[in-house]
Structure formats: structure tokens, C-alpha cells
Amino acid sequence: MDELLRQSRAWVPVLKSAALFLLPFPLLIAFFVALIGGEIGRLAAISGAIFAFFGAGVLTWRGLVAQARFFLGQQLDPPAVPLKTVSAILTALGAGLAAAAGGHGPAGVGAFAALAAVGYFCFYGRDPKRKRIDLPEVAGVDRDAVIVQLKQAYGRLQGIEAAARAIAVPEFVERLKRIIGIGKQILAEIERDPRDAARARRFLHLYLDSAEKVTVEYARTHRQIRSRPLENNFRQLLVDMEKTFEAQHQKLLENDVLTLDVEIEVLNARLKREGIN
Image 1 (cartoon, rainbow, N blue to C red):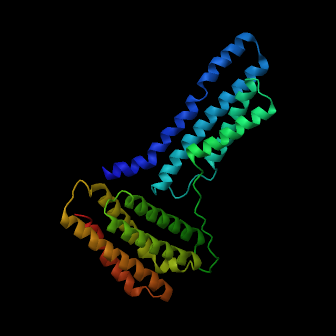
Image 2: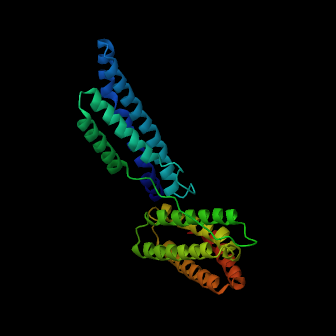
Image 3: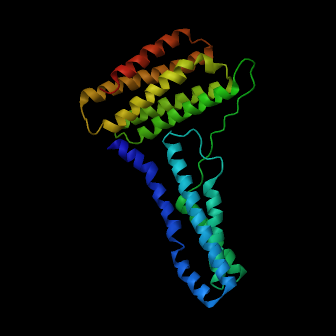
């Protein structure tokens, strides 16, 4: 149920794109009236408004789908093109053309267009920002590969953050917030010195992945399987996760991960073995 709620929070906004497909329907009546009356100028304005609204609807739907996947950690980046911003421009254009077809002057057309753009952003929100990762050039380091690793790691932290919103135990939510905060510090350290990516390879590839899966699984089942042993088990896992995150951060600062690699493998095996069972 919790996983369903988490997915719903991300995907339900996609349904709002239907508004832009419904909005131009009254214009269809005006279109046929202008067609029958042979009003070429009005017909052109109405046609442009209809196409603008439908175009905005399509782009908004695509933008909201991409946003849902990005917020759930299923997509590393939001779209390169700001689809909502383009859709807002098309919506403003459609409103302006509809106002012109209705006989409004330039001031009225401008007012309707501005109100439509403001209303669009109030209803749909702005485009999610891309995570900018700008690594310094370091000899012997594959910069592009490190950027991909960091994006995947940020996505896993984002997945943990999304799962935390579905957990009803305040203590666990606070612990997860601290874990996420430390995780972001670790990734920021790697951004400052890309050589740390090699030192933290087990943390990035093994531990973060298991930590996200366990957190998502607990968020999915914790209300269905409300038991003290389950909560105690997850509490201890969170304690160990936080300690491991802190240790990883400290080891990166000290440029020493040999011992920590062993610790991560042991705890990662425990995460996979025990999970929240």
C-alpha cells in the first residue's frame, strides 16, 4: 500500500495534462461557426489556438511522465528541453489566439496570454532542475564514467528519500534524512576529487543499491506487516547504515578505504540477506 501511495504521488500529476486536451473543446464549436460563416481570419486564429493547446497538452504529458520517473529515481536526469516551459508558451499562445478570435484588442490578447502562462505554472509547476555535475579534469580518471556513477548514486539517494516519505515512523524518517545528508556529502567529496570514485567504488555500486532496495521494501510493507521484530530489525539496519555512511565519508577525507571496503562488503551482504525480513 505504501509503495502504491509513493508511486501515486509521482504519477497522479500526469493526469492533470488532460486539462489541456479538454480546454480547447469549446473552440471546436467556434471553429465550425467560423467555417460556416467563411470568417477566414477568425478561423485561422481558432485553428492556431486549438493546435497550441493540444501541443501544450502533449508536451505537458511527456514532461510530467519524465518528472515522475526522475522523482522516483528511475531516470537520471529530467528532460534536456524544459517541456513545461515550452508548454506554458504554447498555452499562452493558444489563449492569446483564442482572445483574438473573440474580438479582443492587443491589450486584451496580451492580458489573456499572460494570465494563461501564470495559471499554467501555478497548476503544473516548473520544470525539475537538472543536477549539474562539473568534475575537474584529473589525469587517469574517466570523467564521463564518474559522472554516470554520481548520477546513479544521486538517483539512489533520491529513491531512499522518496521511500522515506511513505514511512510513518518519525524516528526512521529522521535517521534516513541524516543518512541521505551524509550520502550527499560523500558524493560532493567525489565531485571535488574524482579520484575518490575509485576509492568508494563498493559504496557507490554495492552498498547504495542495497540500501535503497531495503528502504523501498520497508516502505512498501511496514504497514502491512506491523511487527516489533520487523521494526527493531530495520532500526538496527538504519543505525548500521548511518555508521557506514559516516565511516565512508571520513575514510574519503583520509584517503583510506582498505578497511572500509571490507566493512561495506560485510554490511552489504547483511542488507541483502536480512533485508526487512
